[in-house]
Length: 260
Ligand code: NAD
Figure 1 (tube, rainbow, N blue to C red):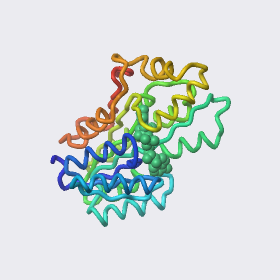
Figure 2 (spheres, rainbow, N blue to C red):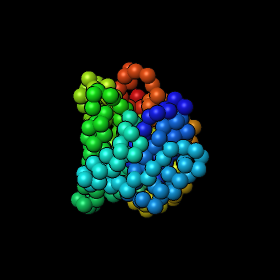
Figure 3 (spheres, protein in one colour):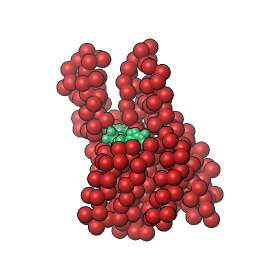
Figure 4 (tube, helix red, strand yellow):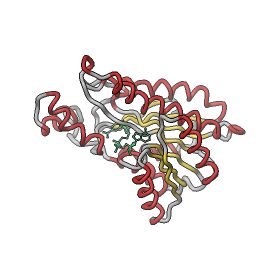
């Protein structure tokens, strides 16, 4: 129960990686806010945690809506007492070659990943900076924070951008006891990835099996997907680390796909 007495706000926590992170932090004693644009799924995820004896609340939260982010974060503080850990995780994927990439889609990807990270960070810092009480901000980056893949221009640009935001936050936040990290998973079998398999097969003119074996796992050392637990345990490690030794850095969790 290393996180007993701490409050974690996790965005995109109604599904996939965010859901597992919220559950892992809750199992370690944190009270968690499940913030997601899909309120029904967020409520179901919060109920699952409450049944296990954890403290959890669901939040109707679009990370690109400044007012919703401000109000939602304040509601977490009012209800659970603070925000000690922010996991900015909400994300989407849209694949297309650059020359055919719709501007609206480019902006949508950039907005959810980058505007969302900025707005949630800004709202959380208002509480973390008070009396320099401090906190930990963890961004879900990706191997695509370091590598490129065809068809993913907006996603790769957004995920690289998170590294910059995290580095600035490490410097600005340090006097207030705030630190930042980027956790960078390889492919994890979530709804976001399931959707890409047929899309990439179509775009690249190969079979779905080849997309998995060659495109997604071809460069890992063991041909394995990164698991939800691989990612959540890394977040837990960072959320419980006692000093600012790692601030501003990224942690690649990818079964050897990308080695820093
Ligand atoms: P997912 O689709 O399972 O979950 C994403 C969640 O984000 C959903 O619950 C969705 O409702 C929510 N969401 C979408 N737009 C939102 C918005 N505007 N405001 C609030 N919530 C919103 O996807 P996932 O695979 O768990 O992805 C989570 C994060 O992990 C993303 O940032 C993604 O880029 C990153 N990531 C995923 C993988 C992977 O292989 N799955 C690899 C590296 C990084």
